[in-house]
Length: 488
Ligand code: SAH
Ligand code: SF4
Ligand code: F3S
Figure 1 (spheres, rainbow, N blue to C red):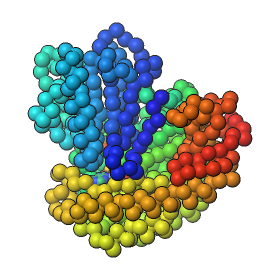
Figure 2 (tube, rainbow, N blue to C red):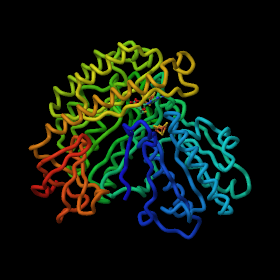
Figure 3 (cartoon, rainbow, N blue to C red):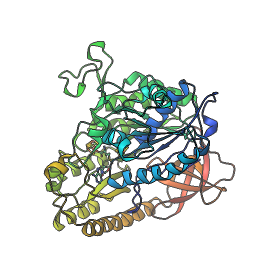
Figure 4 (cartoon, rainbow, N blue to C red):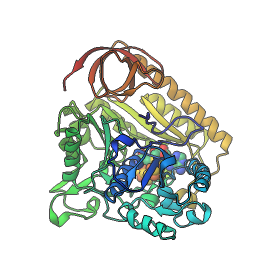
């Protein structure tokens, strides 16, 4: 089982996740074999599970070994230039494989497919198929076009597609934790961000199908679900026929509309043994209602990812984030009021267009004020077509961006260590998720607050909830002794 790394705080690595198929979890068939690799955010991991479901239904068979695959799909990310470079390097490597394997089909899925469209086929000669994030139902047809000797491109974005009726095949999952996409796309137009262009308009998925999927996960033995959306706080769904399929963000009437706090409550009620997480919360939209629901349910984790991006109101305005530093700090205060022990994480971009030294200092001082448990930190990478690329100048020299990023990382490391030290001597409920990479005699799990904990394996099993006394820590990991197993 591979350890999943989401955003990384290391400068040199921009691959956010790379999950590989686990053969045993994929239903067998008698046809061609496919292999999927996911880059980017959790949404891509979740989408790859939809792709696997579509392909399995058409009789293809998943494999965890790229060498035995007839079809290789890379589900790609465009968020920063480096993310795209990583995929291009991977494609270069695959060109060797393609030379030795006649008939091998290479497909690019996801955000890079959407951003570059058919240009990708001109630039990367070995690519046979380019499929944008809303076109995965069309993959079987596209594959047969390729089998017929053509290249195939479908990058149509949809206002309705949510894949609500497709049961994902969680092929790389540990059987304990999984994702449910509750919405797709994004309408926010943050100036730096390519996502609205690669993922299209925001749309919510039917609440009923989300709850059904959570119930199915419980039946399959899952213990934790993460609800995914680029801005979960703008989730809106009406079960009412009249309102269905409308862009309910703009709907005048709220009656009969399920918002995120209601959805969260509905998922929390599925089972007390299913922990619920969600990502990402947007500071401009995160309401007290959501915090109030979190405070009432023990199985909603006390953890919020609330990306600030910058501690300077002037930079936030240039970023088109629609909130000020004061507003953001007011949201932090609200979290602390409703859930005093809530863990909080963020994303920070350093070196955005025109960022002065003073504005950079404001980010450092906001970090001191909030004392984040975790931060995903990046330097600004201009993305073609975004508002910033069109209207602002990417004028901060790379060495300055990197120096500022190092200062931010150094501060975060201090805060993470302090936060971890505060945990020593406390008792935490830990869900055990996988065997440690360093020793098969250790298991790794996470606390309610999303902190990684390493324990001695003894008789404990992956999927157990255990009460752990925290005894030691580094800035990335807690260590502890299991006191007892909990029956939740
Ligand atoms: N929807 C989420 C973010 C998704 S992208 C939100 O609004 O918070 C994940 C993170 O990548 C962003 O929060 C941002 O910090 C970073 N990011 C996005 N575009 C970037 C760019 N052009 N350069 C550097 N980092 C970027
Ligand atoms: Fe990008 Fe902003 Fe949408 Fe997040 S909210 S995906 S940063 S445009
Ligand atoms: Fe990357 Fe697309 Fe996610 S750009 S971060 S894979 S939405």
